[in-house]
Length: 320
Length: 320
Image 1: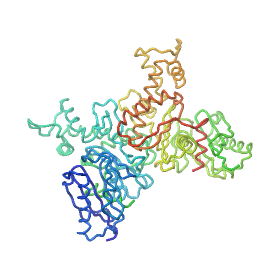
Image 2 (image 1 turned 90 degrees about the vertical axis):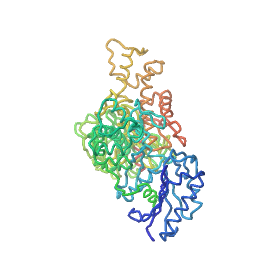
Image 3 (image 1 turned 120 degrees about the vertical axis):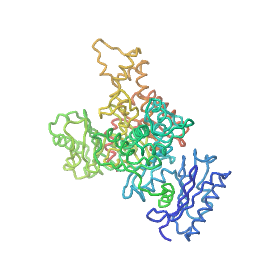
Image 4 (image 1 turned 135 degrees about the vertical axis):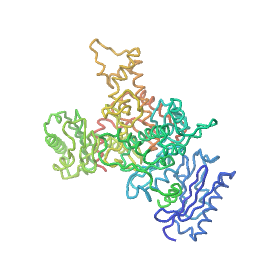
């Protein structure tokens, strides 16, 4: 079966293994949450390798039909060595040579990269980035990360952590502290981890909300989906929190614009389900800051990858 | 004369035209401030072209001995068209096709780029960046700018304004407003234009200074040199202002580190005359923020270009 690609997306709750066609459409997929139950790292690798072989077999795809096996995984990854340096999503994978462990099961090359980089490659090959030589993909969910496409290729920097712009500081005196320990990085201010705090703050300021809060309501449960429901029912508090997030993301994108001057920024990740309202607010901040410093049009748009962007991106890595 | 290069650095007060050897050493140089007295843009171009020819002639260098003529100029430059979009340093050069105007005087290609990009190329070819595939050059003077070397080449982005990271926002609620109109961009907080404000603020807070201030003393005259004198006499106020500048530069470099993960950042520009005290304070902030997120050593160092970095960088452009 020519043109078919295979990708593996290893996340903290789910693991997807998929075959995709040359247009980036998923042909078949195995989806599991059992990978986190493996007690040993090697056990998880064996499970993943088994699923890949199972998927190939049931679709009558030979391993040699594939250019490579692409693997995306959250965390800091030393690309050249294929090693997970550290990941907050999986227990026990610090300094784990995931690429070589998987490689032992296959003849074709295994390519391991950070999930944001993988999604950037997916967006570049199959999504909104098609035809661009340069673009930035930004994922906004529990955390914020980016993948850079420069001169047609993913740019990973020295270690492989280029694009970790969620940790860039946008408000050094912020009351919000990130898991990294720093105050006021973009992640602390704008994404999933900031939502309960932002929500609670506005509640305390006396802002009213249409979101139902029973007596045992726990504000720490506020997440992107809660606020999406709020947005859909025109809840002022939900819209205010989304606007706050958009403000900081707008600053972050403006900073990326000044540093890299890209023609395209594509936004993906869970919080982009807030849709056009969110995108418009992000653009509002961006264009206000950029003022007359934009000399060529820059496109800021939502991901066009339909379905599981993580595993499609991982499969796209195998085209490199 | 093989291996000789020629560069032109056009600034708001001075214009340098130089021949350099293959090690980046200046062989001969013409230096003028008269270029700003020309009433017409074309008049300035004619003057510069004349000086280039004069320099070649008196050194018995034929134009055809040069690979190209490199020209550096402050401002926003559309690289692919060789056009100055806007520059705050020279009057009347908005949307001026400087490259083609100069090209009319020469047979060899003329290469026009932003001065920070030119200095990055100079540093990469002849200075602290020799042997690196990737590096960032940051210039800190009246303003702040950067030039990016990626995969061995200058990276200019869509328009040619990549590296304008002086305009990235590091303190959105700052009381300091940049010439660009934004509050709290790095330039507003950290470089030459911020110094009088920072100095005055600390004076008002009651901090004592060893800097002599006669009755007619105008705080707007405080600049990098004043503070260098203060630093040399161990003046607490001067050291406090320099530390403030270093704090924001440290944040800026940390943000660059997260976004581009470079192995090397080289600092140049007037304020780096503050030397090791300044560099140490910058590194202090950088490493505090970076914490355990550095997985491979990153070098942060001062420029190694001796002499006129602007014109040496411009000449280095001709090697591209």
